[in-house]
Image (tube, rainbow, N blue to C red; front, top):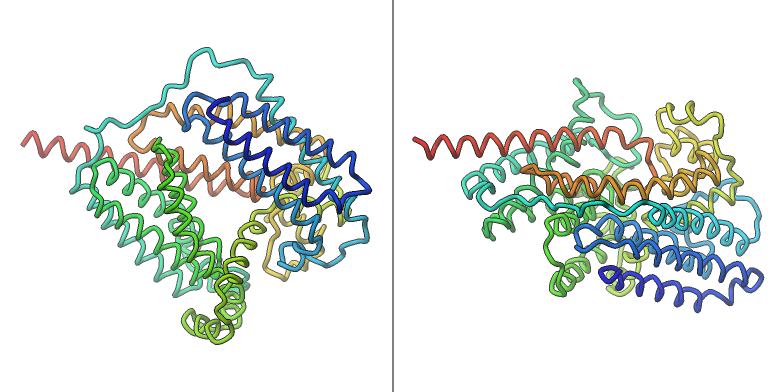
Length: 474
């Protein structure tokens, strides 16, 4: 509990401050509002009671609670104060949104999220304590590839970056909202997309980790810089603002997965690096519109520069607001309830086997977005389970989260491979995507590509080590 005391304090502060700012808007539901917020606070405290002795062991638990606080609690308070904000920001379609009591809708969504978190905490509490402590597998210093091999990995990363960026730019691979695109042979479009988003990032993250372990700062900064540059290129080519945030998130997960103690200097540097990103994000709000209209990358940037005025505080505020609303959570859950969506029930297998799964059901059948509009709404984690099985699905979803935290994450910590740190990073990303986006049924390809990437990287490191042994013996 001591390791997670800060998180309990943060949750308590968020819930109390949120209630203080919103209780006047919830006068008609004041009693149940307090009850559900109290239940959520109790559930978070109970979950943190099971915190482990080290920060690394707590990573999955902390990630779940932090995402929940931001996507469900903080966002709920913002929506209570400004009910139209998700629609205005384009996160929830206005189409077919029925008339409803907004405070009642907020309470219904809050009740479902409290059920999910109470189930999560209760499942953790009911599990028997570990008979043996988690053994953290750390790569010995002697097994870390030397500088020459790290340079080879970095060169391969540069070559793959240039190749994937050129192909993506040439054929508009992954361009958000694009419809009919050039069909490439051998599934090249999908291969390039997954190579860029997972395999290349895995290689650069591993290169950064090895350079850090060897104390090679130049190579470390080069690998990290190349990772961020790929994110910038992805932003410009795909017109996806989240593409710029993905490398930052991966680096944060690498920091955690490496077992490096997070100090105040790390927090300050992260905050300083985030400011220019937050300022830039609003400029790209209309970037996709220009790109889909047929303009090139640089022509679209020029159009943005001419159409936007530079007001630092406004841009920074807009960027922060977009970040908060970017991750689906209680806003989508409220939209699902507001559209009076029915769980798929007996049709669950048919829906899961459809090309777009639950996200397609939400977008086309619930939100009534035409299928000709190339866009999908992510349902969020609890929204996904609600659409699948109703309230019982929320209970199952909370239990599944607890099982992941209790069993899957410790297995990753004990995995003794050369690339075990990348396995941990990928698992944290899978947990983050599943719990935030809620696209659980469409993550199979992501899992497969990550598994193949880990296998290739492990074999590559073993080959480099064998090459080194042979060289030393000669």
